[in-house]
Length: 557
Image 1 (cartoon, helix red, strand yellow):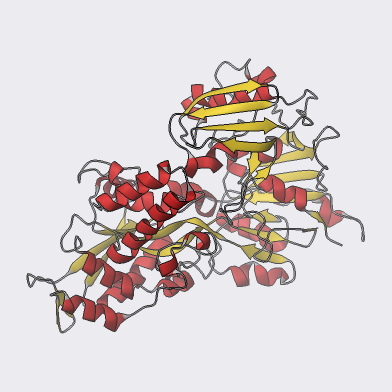
Image 2 (cartoon, one colour; image 1 turned 90 degrees about the vertical axis):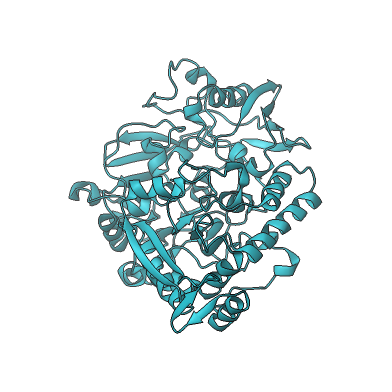
């Protein structure tokens, strides 16, 4: 359910009470010329249980994102520019072995926990061994085997090469204090009501609708943030969150606003901003290759040639939510630019109806009036399906239906039950569906989700890890294995170029849009946000990089 996790904030439920939404706003009440001290953050996630466990994706701390203001990772990484080096954070250095099965990290010596005790290598080793011991804490699924401390260095070992998962190891694990967590009987269920971390904030207050974090008085290892308080409000639907953004009560969020220019930006043209940069994950139309004639790559290529990605972006995604994928390789820009093979650089997808018709007729298909017939003389029809409530996907399907009609393919659109849809897609009981891929530090996760033969299952058997279209290609699987296990850049480049070639020439999936990590925010009280011109971090406040953003903010003059 990757897409629903990624977009949970854009799909959540109803309305926070007036008191929670319109409470004390010190920035609004400050005297003229006085600098802001509070940043108001919002999410449409409904009432929250008091749970600050940084490892649990269901906790309030994770749901609203404030875990990363209290706890810190070893390194910072920027998924907007994934090829850039990691930034030192709690670790000053990370050295991977040539086979990427171990990484040795050097822990800084000037960090302290918010209770005053020193952060040590023992704390870091303890954290990773804790994640290994309790699978419920390992939401990234990394196969940790051991973590050992020596001086201020920690060696973290894994059962298999982790070149493609470096960010999961170094950026996604919140480091916790051993002296407190070793006393917790069940870390997988403990709500951690009094969190102690190495970050610059501590939890000041908690209610089901609002949480306040206060900056530490002293002891943080780098310059303290200018934001003295972070106030999180958990609105219970998109409408309430959007209203709060529009009237300035909420200054930072990420919620799907179909008419965002009118509803949000126009309310304060100078200060209301939205940026949803693409990362290395995509959305598109999966074709079930076990269903004839969609086992034919020529037909799939022709379908790809007529799908109007720009229309899907403008109409279904409101011109911002899922940025258009233009490269023929399916890789989003700019995150995927550095990975594009030389033969595909600068090659952008263009709608070509006449070219698609010529490709089909040259391969034995026949256009009989407005009907495409396959080589056996049977009309080509297709059933497009997605959950009824996913409005952007349903609109995308209607656009694709019209696109395919131009080459004689008669499509119908099915508005499915969500639970049934998940089950049917994983089991291969569909003809075509819009869905997402996994994302990561390299395009490996995109192509693995689409064409990995290692997770290929027969129709009727669930394949939750990917290859929903049951695409069979030994070349693709071999390239994925080679990429993951390669010990040098040349071998990785060769494998990645092969994966792009297969994507272009065999069209196992029709890419349309990129997965974003975005946000709406206001520059009225705070400046220094990441932007397209300065993409130093993804703007979404539930990511580990949210801490880096807060540290970068300064009061607006």
